[in-house]
Image (cartoon, rainbow, N blue to C red; front, top):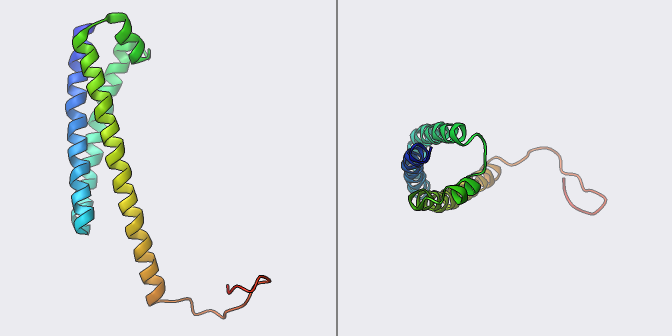
Length: 135
């Protein structure tokens, strides 16, 4: 079980590295405002995520749904423990990069919405609320 679990964790780590690389590439396209390249990288991110999920399912089948930290403590295998630690670090990096990319996307959408509102304002009649603000 230890060797099989270790093999799957190594494959999962490589798949997570590919996912982080794709997220870094997405970040580059976001900062350079290359809209058409973003469409292609989305597919790449989805494929990487599917691969990670496949390895995760394999790992869960071997561990029978038991918590990895508990399994690592019970097996007391140094290589397995190092792989687990590396995967956790990589997952934190992926989460940070994903959050950064989402923030950049939201900022871009907010800016675009403001520009569209500026170029094409609401043409309806303006009325005031009870607080003196326009609708």
